[in-house]
Image (cartoon, rainbow, N blue to C red; front, top):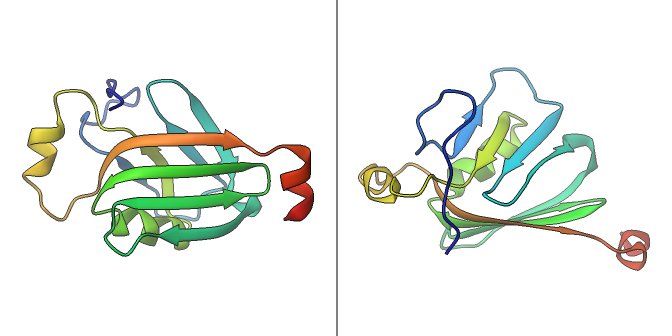
Length: 122
């Protein structure tokens, strides 16, 4: 399992989703290994697993897989273009975040760039 990291914006470490009232231009993704911002304009597909444990975002240049619990909140925020940042929960905060049964809990983010052939097929 990926371990989390402290947030850089002063928000509590267990918040996996940062929303913005106005539509966002970029979606920032933060994991212990990397930080990446992708433009919403290049998002072409969004799939939420029925049990709310995995969310796949297909961008023109990348495939992003988010794993965790209660990811419907993230799905809604992304479809409404309100999600500003999605981050992996900080290490040691999973128990506290688990107390809020309806709050999204991101345990992992995998970001895969697409090769030239995959980009053409989209």
